[in-house]
Image: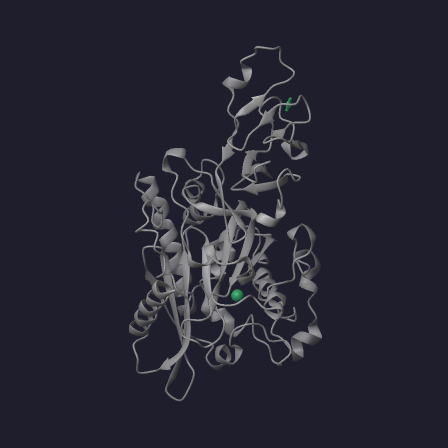
Amino acid sequence: MLSREENDLITRVGPGSPMGALMRRYWIPALLSQEIPEPDCPPVRVRLLGEDLVAFRDSMGRVGLLAEHCSHRGTSLFYGRNEECGLRCIYHGWKYDIEGRVLETPAEPAGSTLKDKVRHTAYPCREAAGVVFAYMGPQERLPLLPNYEWMTLPQAHLYVTKSIQDCNYLQGLEGESDSSHLSFLHRAFTETKRGGGDPDMYGKDGAPKLEGVETDFGVRMISCRNAGDGVTYLRVSNFVMPCHGFVPTGGLKGNPEGYTIHSHVPVDDEHALRFNIFFRRNRPVSEEEKQLEGGIGPGHIKVRNIHNDYLQDREEQKHETFTGMGKQFLIHDSCATESMGPIYDRSKEHLGAGDITAIAVRKFLLKSVRTLDMGKEPPHIMRTPQQNDLRHVACIVANIDASLDPKTYIQEVIAETKQKTIQA
Ligand code: FES
Ligand SMILES: [Fe+2]
């Protein structure tokens, strides 16, 4: 449970809010690269942290992210002309480059210096893994882009999607921090409706033993289920600052073939974007895997969404799946978190042992907000290449001997991961 004040502190992200200031210290996913596929293509609207923006790709292929409204008299630059290394407003022709410089003010007399006096809001962008990352914080605090292992994979090894979530980002993020829901929300009763992962294992023990361990990047979340016969079914996922869940996908392989990143990026206080970044280290993503990550229609709106009750089928719910909403985890998670309302009031909840990791994530976020408020650098901000060695942010899923200490096993897998990457 959080007090009303804490709930406000942790959920409000607009300009001037403490959580908004924290989020603005990180590179956050802003849009998919494919939304602006080529130089001089049409710009797209982007709303992040309560700010209306426009993204465009200039003639040199560089991405710009500008405040939507023209610095002259406010016309939307979404309608602008993307030409010759700049975005030109259609009202009086002011033209901006990706850094927000005003290149031309053609309605002004020759020799006018007006353009030199104006600097339009523009945020730096970087592309990796088919995602455009943006930094919306103070220029002098611009960090390195984190070097996660999946950022440099060939595009065929990645499958990246984006969907609009009709609720505050934290509701989605808490869903990443909650292994116990796997035994219920995502359960399927028949072969054909199974999603990814190991539903047989989730089903065996619906009350996993959870532990959240604070790390340099956020919280390592450990869940142990009693799988019978002296076996523990172990899952290790990570909350990574400021809004990412790294979740193990890909079978019982200790260190799986890859994992999935679910980023819950605030659009504003009541909406978020969920970026799903699915990757496989050593092979292309299969068509079947893409299907499981699907379910998103035009405009990044989910085909099953809160406005159509997720097309719930009560017969399916009786016989095939726990939700009656098909097999896509995205839809199950969305229903669970969006149906709480736009901003859930956490002073009304009743938490138990199944919420230990979600509580750890909240604590970490609150502590990080307060750290920044004290004028200190929050965690997981990359300043040096040494800091940016992030191979320890590993996800694990395995059946281990119940007598084994899961933390010892985790340390072994992380050491192995580092070794493998060095050899590669
Ligand atoms: S409002 Fe954009 S150029 Fe005038
Ligand atoms: Fe889930």
